[in-house]
Length: 111
Image 1 (cartoon, rainbow, N blue to C red):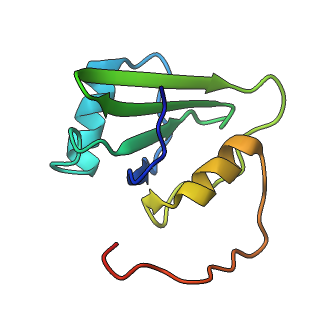
Image 2: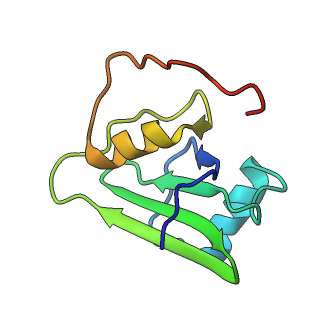
Image 3: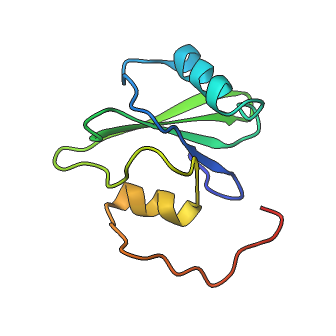
């Protein structure tokens, strides 16, 4: 089950071939986010057309992949910039919400 508790969520900032599996995606994570693979963080990958999305994460006893394919449209996010996204941004990405401006009430200092 995909848990969004206190996990960090990282967006891989390049398009990825969606035929890649556990080993290939794990290698990309180790290159882009060193020493984060087994921390319980979520790693989000998208294809070039941004109509397919994979989430790789470590789930207690092994790696797991969650996959979503859109029948119409694309995920509204651009590659580049920040690699860590908030839980709110991730949920809006999955739901197809395109925010014009995000107003955060506060930000925790330890994050």
